[in-house]
Image 1 (tube, one colour):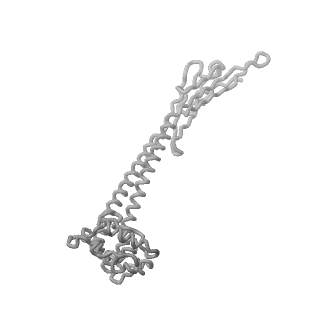
Image 2: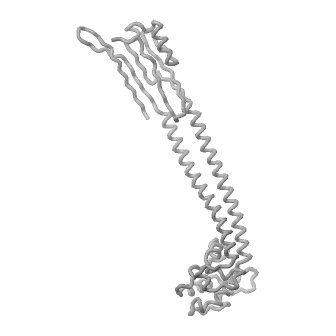
Image 3: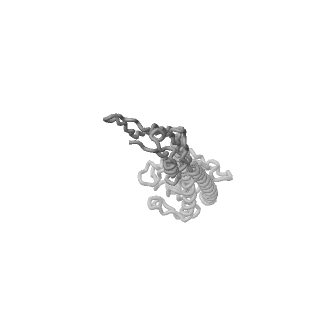
Length: 298
C-alpha cells in the first residue's frame, strides 16, 4: 500500500519542564523539498495534490539531522537559572560579610570587658591563697610568678611559664577542677578560657567570695556569666558566617553541575531517518513499508 504523504517531524528538546519547543520539518517528494512550518501544513500539502502519486509521495522520504531545525526557549530558562545562582551568591556574601563584621565588633567588646574586669594577678593571688587546699604539696609563692609587679598592665607582670608550671602542679591533685593552662594574653585561648572554665573564676573583680569548692559546683560570679554570654554571642555570629561560607561553596558546586548539565543537553544530536522501503509480495505486488531510524547522541 502506498501513502500519499508522510508529515514532518515533531521534536522536543526540553531543558526544563517549563521550556517550550518549536520545530520545523522538511519533507521530500518527487518535485523537490517542501518546508513544513507546523503540523497543519501536512494536511494542506496532502490535499494540494502535490504528493498524490505513489512516485511523488511514497518513493522515498528521508529525514536526517540537517533536516531538523529546532528552536527552543530553554535558553531563557538557562539565563534565569544562572541569574538565580548569581543572586544567591551575592546574598550569601552579604550575609557572610555582615556577620563577620558583627562578630568582630562583639569580640572587641568582650575582650575590652575582660581586660577591665579580669586580672591575671588576681588569679595568681587566688591560687596562692588556696593552694594548700587545692594541692597540699604545692609550695609556690606570689613573687615566683609575679616577677614584674611595676608593669602597667597585669598581663605584663606575669612569668607565664611559671604560672603554667604552678597550674600543672596543682592539677596533679585529683578532683580540684584544675584542667587547663592559661596561655598569654592576647591569644584567643586566653579570652576563651577565662570565661569558660570555673578554674579561672577567682580572677574576676566581683569574685571575692570564690572558693575551691565553687569550681566543682560552677558557682561563678555575675561578671563571669556576663562575659560568657558576650563571648557566646560573638561565637554564634561567627558560626552563622561559617555556615554561609559553606553554602557559598555548595552554590558554586551546584552552579557548575547545572552548567555542565545544560551544556550536555544543548549538545545533544538527534539523527532520524524515515523511508518507505519497497517489499516484494506475491504476484508481483510491491508494498511500501514505513521504516524509521532515530539516534540520540548524548
